[in-house]
Length: 369
Image (tube, rainbow, N blue to C red; front, side, top):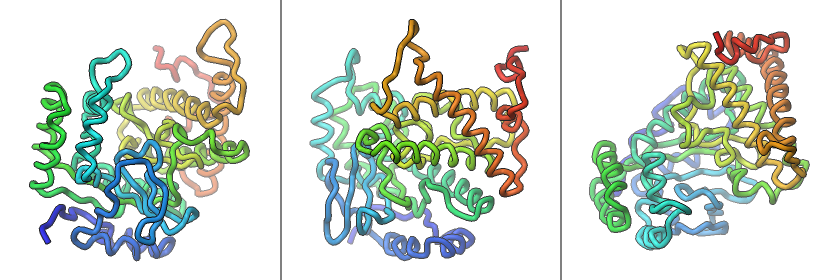
């Protein structure tokens, strides 16, 4: 059989990580091993949103997951996520054709073209460097969490990275070319020439349905549990020496934004996280202020229509946003203190300052000289 893709990295290349997973999730390795064999990833060709059984496995492509599908044994089971195989789907042409039939409101380009302009990413595909970087960041982060807390975070755990063959890549380019304008082609095709296209397979503790696409289906008490869970995860992320994003991620998604947070409060798309080490204090303060803003927005969407919001004279902030911003800051400060003390971890000095209950130097926090 002709090789459609090659495995460029797998979790079995990292002995320390395999040993750590064996302590907590040995079944993950059992499920991952067959996927490292040739041509074992293309088990779900459909690009439609889907949830049902195929060939004895529960296959899910929830709303919002255009570039990934999930394999599990049951609704309560952990999942294997396969991201990037859409580039080889037999439905790719129809999806591109459907997308080309309408443009965004007040814009002369389509949703897929906007994806290229805004994020410099391939529609219904992954650039290989994107997949590789996502895996490297995810592995580094999960190792740090495991070392500090003794478990893996409620976040993607990368299992392997693959790269499409030149023939499959050429076929993808040929399929999408008629449906992109010149500007989109000139931006995207040099990136494909440089990096190729590929994908990533990762493990998640449950089907990671995102807040933006599902939260109104969740009962009220579960929403509050998800909020607490998200705050605890962000605290661990900061304690482990990371920031959830930097300003270079503006407009292209952060792991704590509503489209990347699960309806249980877990985080996805770890490509945005950055190591704190080496970032100046003033910039850390800037990012932490932005973090408070993004988390407030995420919590607002988590609550959905649960709370009647009041606009009094000014549209922004609303009364709900005003209150939630206080909740975000205070809960995160408390979670940082509790978890850092529990694990005897010394916080980064700027983070400790920013979230200290005794600190009130507004000028310094805002970077005013």
